[in-house]
Length: 105
Image (cartoon, rainbow, N blue to C red; front, side, top):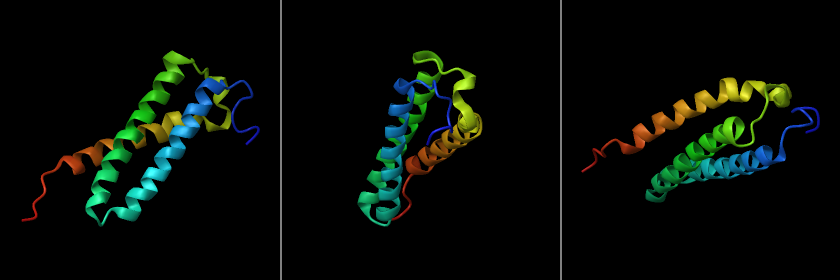
């Protein structure tokens, strides 16, 4: 959407971030749809690994790789400052839940 981010936000950062988020959202919906099955736990693992890797890759690209400058974020400055830390905490909690031993006989 024009005007949401700065006009000079590097496409080398924006495209992988957008496609990574798209795949993560599809995996999240797949996890939600299949969680009551045995396949759902596997899909949850795939989603969690992908989502964490996507966040860390975007973080790396934004700081070291492409080097996004603060003014290039435009109105989306709150995403790396507020949303990304919360998502990393959520993925960490999800890893803790997925690695918990199964108590069912």
